[in-house]
Length: 354
Image: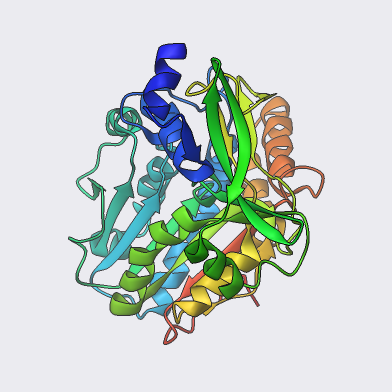
């Protein structure tokens, strides 16, 4: 463990929080996502596609509706951001076989940073419609639709704090074989970024997803150039709460972020209103932010579940509806998970967001 942490910090022993998180999560040799299969009972957590195929079907219905709204283009590009273990893509391909016109038109791209997860996805997904990409440069024709489920929360963040009228940035500090967190005076450049988004109005901790904004820059460019949009589903909040939202999970239990480094997942709650401001600054249209429960119910998840359950025995029905409740119940994922849809300003598609 000590050797691993030494390699993460290098000679400096001091890293800005977002750079520390990037190394801990994505480093090719040491990062959590590069060496571990984090999903399912044997992993550390589950996501909505792992919980129920019906969730995946709702996204596919949304995608088909979007394609129809774009006047059924002969070529449509669909990009899944952070496809995990491939559950969603498998259901996507299976479902689209019932819709031959869009299946003929669609090119499916999986945007994945983890070589380990790419290997897993390639074992599970077999279709000439699917290809893996590290960037979006080769996608130059046809409208483009991005989808990210629990993509934004896994992107590293910066944290800042106002102390006696001054602003400080949080750093990870490796000393005496322990990782600690300290605050250093913020750079003028970062201070201006915080002012741009009016993040210094309230006291408390300020979280700023600079890494996320940089990750989304090319996505925004493609949507503006090619037409289309992006759908993000994640857990988070709409109004600034100025609290530390970093959380770590190890074997389905909460974990101290300074422990099990490289072996535990670390995420943060998504500040949806801040991302909305970012997308608006990129001259995209942003639909009303709604809860996962609202989105899935407007898409018809309860009706679809009833259809699916008709052929099930009692035990399987109970299992199905308990999974659906997990997705839509306010006490579970239904309200804490939010949905944001951004699109080209020319686009008139608004399914489930009215």
